[in-house]
Structure formats: C-alpha cells, structure tokens
Amino acid sequence: MSTVTTLVVCAAAGLAGALVMDVPMALLSEGFTPAWVAASKLQRKPVDEVSALAAQLVHHATGLVGGLGLGVAVVALEPRLGTWAAVVLPATVFTVFIMNFFGFVVLPTAGFDDDRRETTLLQWLFSAVVYGVTLTAVALFGLGA
Image 1 (cartoon, rainbow, N blue to C red):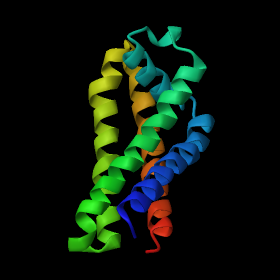
Image 2 (image 1 turned 30 degrees about the vertical axis):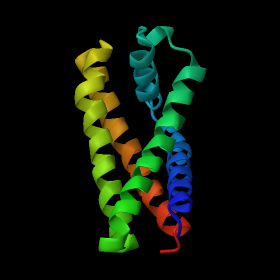
Image 3 (image 1 turned 180 degrees about the horizontal axis):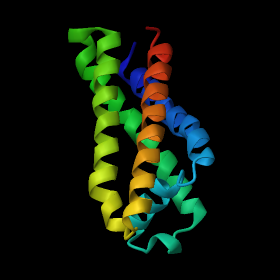
Image 4 (image 1 turned 135 degrees about the horizontal axis):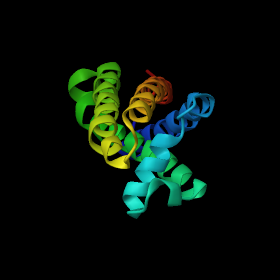
C-alpha cells in the first residue's frame, strides 16, 4: 500500500475512533468534559466559556490527527514489523499517552474539585480505550490486515 493511502486510511481510522468515542461520552455524566477542557486550553478560556462547536471540533480534529500520527508510525514500522504489529504497537502507545497526558497534565488545570476531576478522569480512561480499540480495528481493516 502506498504511503499516501496508509496515511489516509489511518487518518480516517482516527476520525472513526473519535466518532465512535462519542457514544460512551454521550452516555457518561462527564462524557464530553474532556473535549470542553481541551478546547478551553487551546482557546485560553475558562471551560464554561467554550462553545459546543469548539469542543466538538477539537475532539474530532484530535482524533483525526491521532490517526494521522498512527499512519506515520505504520509507514515507518510496517517494513520491519508487518502490518499487525505496526498498527497495534503505536496505537496502544498513543492511547496510553492520550490517557495520561489529558488525565495528569491537562485535566488538573481545569479547576475542578477532586470529585469531579476523578469522575472525569475515570470516564475519560474508558472513552480513550474505546477510541484506541476503534482506531486499531478500523486501521487494520482499512489496511487489509
């Protein structure tokens, strides 16, 4: 598969992951809070001043960019590791990274009390796993693995 095709497939997988991730986020009490917090940090505004559109754009664009990053890793690793490992390893690393980066770097700056921060973190961890599993499955399918 060409480099461009791999990048497009993985970017689409990242967007698909963000869209599927919307399901648990919509069902959980703090579900979309991470999107609002991320948008607030990018816009340098308090969380309650961020628009729903901005939060959704940040959330879905981040999913797409994450997929594109996976594509770069797949292009670099596939000749050495094969498709399965070239997708699963970096997708796992990326998922663990976003879980920790948001949970321990971004979220603590949101100004939430301890209970809300803990609830948001736990729900974020679940939603991030949904993203990672979807990203991996769609990328593997799209790459014909």
